[in-house]
Amino acid sequence: RHQRAGCDDTATMPPLSIAQRRQWWRETLGSPRFVCAPMVLQSELAFRMLVRRHGAALCYSPMLPAANFLASQADGPDAEHPVTGGPNTQASWFTTHAHDRPLIVQIGGSDPAEVLAAAQLVQERCDAIDLNFGCPQRCAFLGGYGAYLMDDPARAKELVETLVAGLRVPVTAKMRILPSLAETVAFARLLEGAGVAAVAVHGRRREQRHHEGRADWDAIAAVKSALRIPVLANGNVRTRRDAEACVRQTGADAVMSASALLGNPRLFEGPPCADREAGQPTTLRRLSMADEYLRVCESYPEGALPRVISEHLFAGLIIYSDVS
Image (cartoon, rainbow, N blue to C red; front, side, top):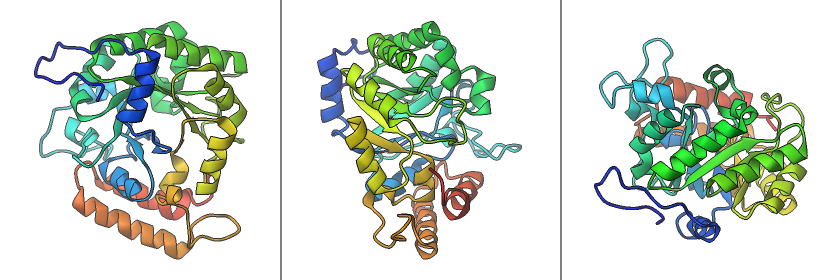
C-alpha cells in the first residue's frame, strides 16, 4: 500500500509521481469499476457493507465536516446529537471495520490546517483522504467548502498541497463541472498538479443541486482526456446499464453513484427482478432491500443512528425511486 507505517505521527509520505498514483489505483484499490459515492450522513458503515455485497468495489465515507468532527469528543455514550439526531462523537461521525476496504474518507472544510488535523485522525483507517469540492448543499455554502471552493482555485490548491505534504496516505478530490468546459478542465488539471491521486467529477454544475437536468458526460470525458490520473464519473447512473454506458462514453476509470444507490443498493449488480421498462426495483424488491439493510445494521451498528436508518428507509422506499 502507498502508506508509511509506524508509530511516528509526524512521518509523512513523499508526493506520488503520476505513475505511482496509477499504481496506487491498481494495487491498493484494485482498479475498482463501481463506486459508492460520499454522501452527507448516508454512506455510513452499514450502508457501505450492504453495497459491497452487491457490486460496489470501492466506498467513500460520509462527508466529515472538519470543524464539527474536531469539535466532537472521540467517543462516549451520547453518540446521537440531542438536537439534530446526527453524529455527536468522532466515533459516530466515522467508523470502519476490517472488511470495509478499500475505503476513502471524505472531509469537507476550507481551512487547510483544520482539514489536515481532521484527516490525520482518520488516515490510518482508510486508503486515501478525499477533499470535497463538489457538495452544493447549504452546509457547504455556510462553511465555505464543497463546490463553493471551486470559486477560489488558489485555496483549493492550498488545501490539496497541505494534505499531500502532511499525510501518510494519498489524497483524492471530488468536484463538479463549472459553467465552461475550459474552466472545468483547468480546475481538474490544477488538482492533478497539486498532487491528487484521483479525481471524481459530478457532471452537473453547483446550481443543479437537486439533479436538475442530465449530467454532462461529455464534460467528464474531456476531463478524462486531459488528465493522467484516474478519473471517476458521477451523475445520471440509475441502473447497472447506465453505469456501463457511462464508463464507455466518458472513458472514466470508474463510475460512482450516490442518490440512485440510496434508492437501490443493489444497483451495481444489476436488477434481475426489476421492472423491465424502467430498470428500477419493484416494490417487493425494495422491501427486500430495506429488510437486508436493517439486518446489516444489526451486524454493524456503529454509526447507524436512528436518524440515519430512518433516512435510508425513506430514501430506499420512497424519495429516490425515480431519481436520475
